Image (cartoon, rainbow, N blue to C red):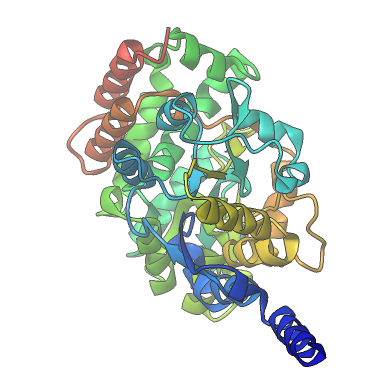
Length: 422
């Protein structure tokens, strides 16, 4: 009897010494959060680190290279959303909250590390459905080696200087400016920056956002918007309307385009590209787009970036894996992989200065944003159809198939007939 008890004790001790993963069946967790600008950080750092900590969970990045909204819409229709996924403001994601397919994050520990203003932006009908990965700003990235070559010792400081700089760059045989026109967020950037620097002072802080939402915005009444779009069009690099953000990074790395209008979330890659093109990191400049009139303040688009959220799952093992990963990714020692790879300004309050590594150009940009008047990017305040049609209108402008006045009239008609407005 004692011998049997001893054997049982040995068996129990042996079982207690088995790794935790032995208590779990293997789980594959699909996540739709990974972007190409931090794919290396994911593959080389985050994914192996998480799987080492939770060896029964295998992470699978899905939707890479696809338009996230289209991917999520298709999979929502099949009741097959990734358990961890990006979310955005408005449209599809509000519908998924209403359907109970995207869940409230209020009870997650990670939510406590995000400032309330950013949580408010991702709260709909009382549901906190996303924790933002950063603060999004429009930016103008400049290869100062090219500007120096054509006679500019400093970056342009206002709209008139910007257009003259474009002319000087083009006369020297370089492309002046590019944008990732294939992405709605970035295609709206030159348009909205021009628009707000024309109408912002008159409408006042919050006036643009209010008018676009209540259907009273009338951009045709401001002919200078069309005139400035007309001024910009000849200097936009051929092909920009179809470029991805990766294309823009490659172009700046190639060193044949002087400036790029892009989001601050691509800062690390574009700044590194300019350094590669010129051999000197000091040649990579990142400034608030100088689309203001001389002696007028700059209006700057600023809004929370896309967020991370969780979808409803019915499998308890998958639910556990989802929650473990979601909390894990927002720990500062893990989130730094994303933040540092992208060079963005962190909003995670638990990150330390040692964990935040920003290029010098980003630090200077961050300081400059303090002197700008900010407005909220409003592409999220229109339907997906209007969003797409605005992109098409702007593409026609930059390819020479429409005038500035034509485009403004088309966009105004889209605003006026958008079911989200009024």
